[in-house]
Length: 337
Image 1 (cartoon, one colour):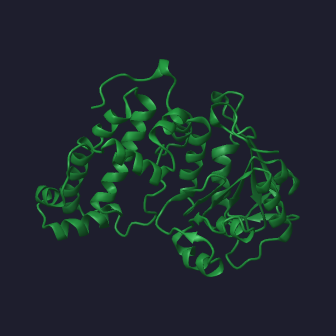
Image 2 (tube, rainbow, N blue to C red):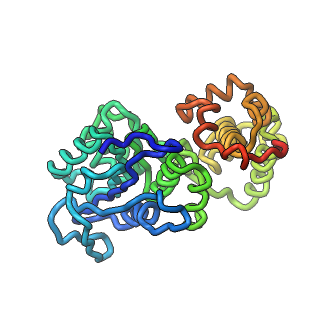
């Protein structure tokens, strides 16, 4: 069934099929179920339908001593609008030819495919990532590059969205990618609702580093860096130079840069760019302010905002608002401050 966008930009075919196999990665499979398989009456009747497709004859043993009884076999893949590969049993473990054929046929018919963590090896074996950007857990990056040199592997992101092909990094990044897909299909309020039920942040940008060498500064550094982050967030329109930030933190510029990146996984410029884009997205979704006004509020000129939107999100601010903004009657008209 073709998976054309339906009303409000969501696809017509909302059937999500997760693959099950012997040696199933239980956590990644649970991520798919939690995001797309739970009953959510609060979302109304036009929500995802979920099924599990057995890749091979049973018994299908999952990690942790569980066994999975699937809803059906690969015939379910043919019916799917979205197919999820929730991990794979090993980078060197061959992907069954019938699964490869089913994935290729479904994708050619319009189905979206998504991998969580090592599930990227399934999509790669099917040839669906050739010439595309993709990511996986940082432990598998070198192996993926060696086995599939035609893939543009991005090791330093949480997930990559190529439209009809999506890949996520480590297991928990599957939650981020899944929420991103909910946001694409149903808008920010739906994604926020699902995130609240999961008790996780509603959005972590896909470009965020998946591995931070030292995620929490030692105590004496935390007291110096945390106020700096708050200061930058509170005044995104301001020009924050490294020299000024380092002085405020009581460090030399070189020490500040080193400790900032160790704590956040990004340079001050990259961190600030991500914060500005996140704030611009929020304002486009929830206010009626013009693009020029929003750009000024977050520290961009309008041309720069459009440039960064195209580079990071492959869209324009206007197109983003048309897709994710609230209806006119629900728009917040308060100050942007």
